[in-house]
Image (cartoon, rainbow, N blue to C red; front, side):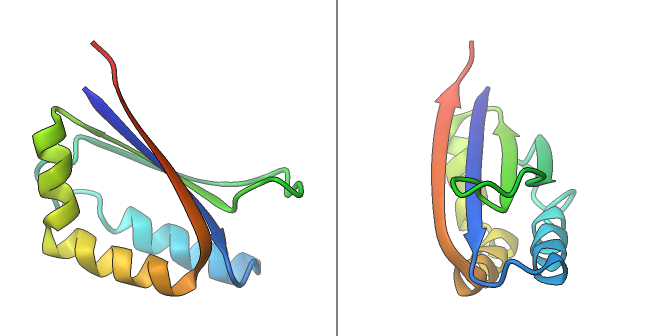
Length: 96
């Protein structure tokens, strides 16, 4: 199982903007067959080092993750997130 985590810091950190980004990310659910699990969380601490949104997704294999990243639904969501984010960091890891 591959876990893919992305943290987003948004340009506009208003609650409305953060909630819209969360909803856009949650729009991936059920629309890409390779996506086995999705969780989207909004930061509650708001510390200086905090990111605004965490995206956690899971896939059966690296190949499935690669297919997901090229899927048209993901491409559209990624375009939106690129337009609203200040920065993003990611980690991908495998659990056996």
